Amino acid sequence: MRLTAHFSLAELTASNKAAALRIDNTPPADVLRRLQGTAEMLERIRSTVGRPIVVTSGYRCPPLNRAVGGVTSSDHVTGQAADIVAPAFGTPYQLARLLAPLVSTLGIGQLILEGVKGKQWVHVSTRIPDKLFNRVITITDAGAQVGIQVLS
Image (cartoon, rainbow, N blue to C red; front, side, top):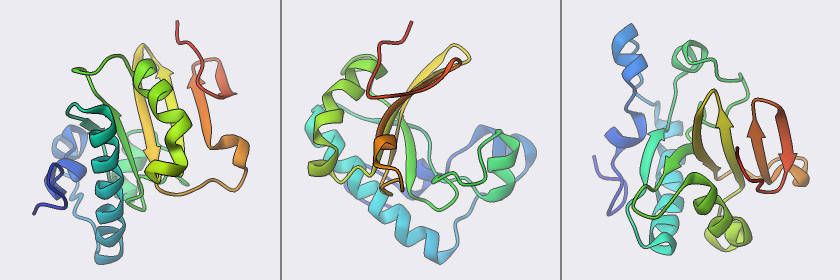
């Protein structure tokens, strides 16, 4: 099922971990509506970047979210978030730096540059966090910082 011109439901629900653990990661109807909004946000990001966006993690049902070590309040569980990279554009840091000043324009509720356990990606969500200083942050193994910080 195609959600937008460049993003499908299969792409936003794909999970090697779910397949390995035989977890059914099919979203319920209310989550499917939110995934539509997430795909639309991803389309705006793709248009801004001018290159393909790769979704490394999208919707996670609660059992899958637990299996990957996600927090219980994760926007992935509600279909409102995606972890992305854009290798044809640049590094996750470069992507986050481009997107940070455009969060309101692009409908990004929260933007997180993540660099943990040797991996880097950009987390985008349609939900604006309760504490606005958490809207654009960097998370590393050392913790969270406001804004987009250089990853080592």
